[in-house]
Image 1 (cartoon, rainbow, N blue to C red):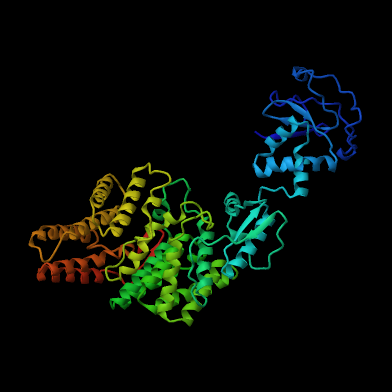
Image 2 (cartoon, rainbow, N blue to C red):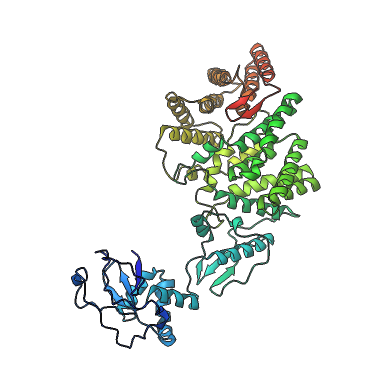
Length: 569
């Protein structure tokens, strides 16, 4: 409980005090007598007035405060008279107070109680005034945080890791930012840092593992990616006490996700020679791409990087960075995302595509390899919340190997920590996410894959909203599970191959005859179905599946747009 300070003067509230917070009141002083003219403790206080009914409930042994301050302890119900102490007296108790307040990290009220037992009494204000002089600070002030962040950013630009200590203890800057509900970039902007206060010290923590430093500007850009991730991670998509997979599920409805998905579809259609439909997709993507700057999130940032790792059309990829660099420079010329977008565009313009791709891949991998989130300035659970994005279904034609390397960095145990899902919807999202992680990492083998797939299918039977995405994940997992037992040289495995084709056929039927730009990867499964039929020697069914794929492409409209109520034609 807190300490309360009451000053016995004419500014005290009128009326009967609260029974739970009774202090003895003296005769009111003249309004012209300021607190600074109070008599020293050695003088005899004026005689108190007769106590009221409420006052008579006090013990006669309790000292009556006069014009001096009274410190009320809401824990003990006692009122103590404070004392004015000289500098010499304060200094004689300095080490004891430091030990209690700083070294043992006791709260001020506890320090005051201990010191009162030793005969040293002072008000909260007196203690805080003395702490300011001594530099006994346990809390972050805005000015100190700004100074630390500015210094940290300058050291980051030099490739130096940074930690700050106050009175021998590491400073939790991120706790201050989280408590205030702001990001580091709301406070720290480019500029020379001020001198740190004496009680703050900047140190370089030893590296945990050897760091390979890339040449050129890649290092500073990689650090800037991590800085942006740290900044954006504090802008949570939903309450932090929800299951870890929930933010990614919510991100599926975000306009930024839709824009990047449209650009992904456009890139794929261009690679297939469907330029008119690809152009329509590309146009839709650029209509909302500016939201990457206006409403940024760590999910959008990672999704954007993943899109560029897959992009086959280099002209589209370059145009995305050009657009983001120009737009962000206009509306947030000194923001971290603006510097990142402009830096990547310059890097892409001055390096060959292979170097650019390696740089982006290293950025994503470095983010996923963060183990100590607190030391990296990230909220707890940030990396695990990003895992579902790494397993978004992709078109069959894309190279799976680089993604498998990134997906191998995801630790499912981190995704399973935190609050357990309570609602059926939450449980299904969690199971589907676990199925994608486990299935991909284990090449869809193991009984757990089938158990999770069956659980997802069972849960979705009771949902009233569109569940195609979850059904797709479950059926596709079952198809790949049975596919894993097929051996073209072993006739006894033909039955497993037939099962895999049956499940993949059901997967394709979910999308066939319909069109949804958010589920474009369904079309890739029609091509996969054609391939599996051909491997089984069924050329007729393989050709039929290929015709179905071509018809599905033709069903994609050339004129459409996203609206608040869905897809508009």
